[in-house]
Every structure is written in structure tokens, then in C-alpha cells.
Image (tube, each protein chain N blue to C red):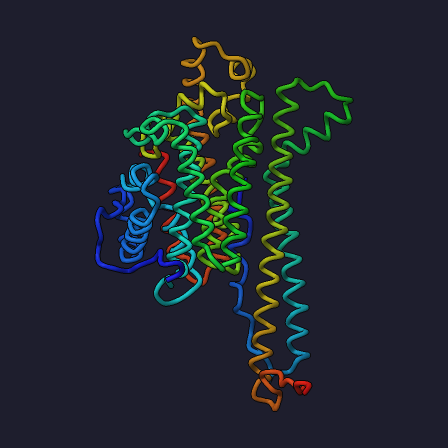
Length: 324
Length: 133
């Protein structure tokens, strides 16, 4: 297919493994074949990449992925169209996964995270220069592979711009006494934008864009709550956010308390435990807020999808991530 | 906070308008007016529901304004949060209802187009030009 990326061929070399936690939802939604094609496409692309980049790309991509964004692309397509997922949509999902990994590489550098899901991050393994250059290589090649799909090019450009804005906004606003609405705006531009684009790649009419945004918001919120709980399901770390004064959902709820907001805005190292406990105390309220976001997303799915079932399944799966 | 009880789920499913009366365009226009009226009323109904969810914050703001202030910083922030959430919900409702109306009117148009396709009206435009020599 387009630029030879999607080659539905016999498995060649190391297949791109899907995280075991996501296999049930993939099976439930009936996208095993599409996920296999996606994995093979990424493996093929790495095999064809410049030799200088191949080791770093293999490290980044071939360790297993949640593949949640491609799953969203496929589900949004299925929600509006009948029949098999076209190769154009699979191709778009491949490219989205590439852009997603660019954001992961940059996030890990900015957050100074040496591990992601109990594995060395790209910059920890190969150094910051290599990680930065690899992310640039991925970006350039993903745009090249989008080829003459101008709508997809526009969507990917929008995605990268919004992610950049979100990261700058989040960093600028750290340790500020902000509220839940501010958290919602930041999360909407961060993870929300990624899933909005996923929805638009699945259904080019844009009808499910708002759904995608809400799914991303839910995902981001579950990530925040899971981090505060101390789980590792979503690959991040709660103490990184505490240390950096990042506005998470539990933080936005907790800093309504004047004592906590004072510490949050100007923490000493010895304050981090107290902050962590204050955030944990907000988990029940945060969970209730997650339920509200999920309800919004469900309403969107039922109103605008011909077949909302795949989208409802995605919402259900995402909602559980806060407690893993 | 959110859409539960917003009434969006109570509305008629998009695209389930009653059948056209013999492809009559005036019937479509009438149905469009009804759809627009229903959409507008549903929208206002949801605005009222959103107000109800955030009534306490709005009333506290009004009372504080009448008293000439007197709120602590924490109280002022809590009220601001509540009102911001209300404004966002109202904006979301108006966008969602606009999208629903767009969908419904689009479907009415499509049904009119397919109803009139076999009535001697050409389904595709015919180009009436010649290439200049």
C-alpha cells in the first residue's frame, strides 16, 4: 500500500508485541488481524530504516506496546462504517503510533525518566542526542509516509502542534494554584488531542472528534489517578509529577485546601509525602469525576456513532485503567 | 458536571424523522422547522439543567456581588471553578446540539434528494460545454 509501509505479509523478523493487558480488548473488538498488520508494518518499516537508526528504533518499538491509539482509530472506523478496516486506515494508525512514540521519547527526556514500563527509556539506553535525533527521524519519515493523504498530513500537523502547546502550557503552569477546569484544558490539549486525531483518522468526517477528545481526557485522568495510587499500568510515575509540581486531577482537587495549595506551590523535599497523601485522599472524588467524563464520552458515542458498541467498549476498558 | 440527566439521551435518535410525504419539498421544510424547534427547545432545556447543577456557585457569586465582596480567596476560587465548569458545560451543550441539528438536517436533505431522484430530475449534473478547438 501507500509508500510500501503496510505490507500484509508473512511475519518477518521480530513481530511487534501487543501488551498482554490489551489483548482481551483487542479480541473483544475483533481487531486481531488489524493489530497483526500494524505490527508487521512497523517491523517492516524498521527493517527498511537507515542502519544508523535501526537499533534505537527497534528498542523503542519492538518491546511491546499498548497500541491503544491504533485501537481507537479502528474502533472509530468500525463505529461509523461497515466492512473490514481499509488499508488506508491501518496505514494511518501505523503513522499515529509513530507520532505517539515521538511524544513518549520527548516526554521521557523532559521528565528525566530512566525507565518506562520497567525498561530503559530511549535516552537512558542510547543517550539524549540519539533519542532526540531518533524522534526527529521518526517524525520526518512518518510525514513522508503520509504521502499524498493531505487530510492525514493536516491532522498529524495539528497533533504535533497541540502536543507542543500542551507540554509548554503544562510546564509553564506547574506549581500554580489552578483548578479542575485548568487541568481539563491542559489534559484536553495533551492526551485529548491525540485521541481526537485518532478518531478523525478512523472516521474522516470528524463526527467522532469530540468523542476522541473525551476518551483522551478520560485516559489522561485515569493515568493521573493510577499514578497517585502508585500503580505501573500506564508506565509513568506519581512522584515525577509531585516533584515537578504538575497539575494532575487529584492535585487540582487537593489544592482547594489552602494548606495543601501553599505546599504545592512551593514544596520542600520533605513536603512531598504530605502532598502525596493529600492527593491520595482525593482519589474517591477523582474517581467520581472519571465516571462523569466516561458518561460524557458514552453520550457522544451514542449520539454520533452508527454503531457505538466499539466505542463503549473502549470507554469501559479505559475507565478500568485507574485501578490497575 | 456532566451529561447524566442532560436530556441528550432522551431525545429522538438522530436520523429517525418520520417518512417524507411523497417527496414533497414543502414537507421537508416543515419537518426541518420542527426539527429546528425541537433542537432549540432541547438545547434550552439542557442549559437549564446545567444551571441547576451549578446553581449554588452562581447564587453564591451573585450574593457576594450584592454584598460587595467579603469572600475569602478559597471561596472566590471555588465559585470561579463552579462557574467555569458551568460555562464549559453550556458551551459543550450548544456545540453538541448544533452538531445534532446539522446531522438531522443533512439527513432530511439526503432523503429529499433520494425521494426526488426518480422523479425526472437528473441525479447527476450534465456538463454542457465543448472543448474549444
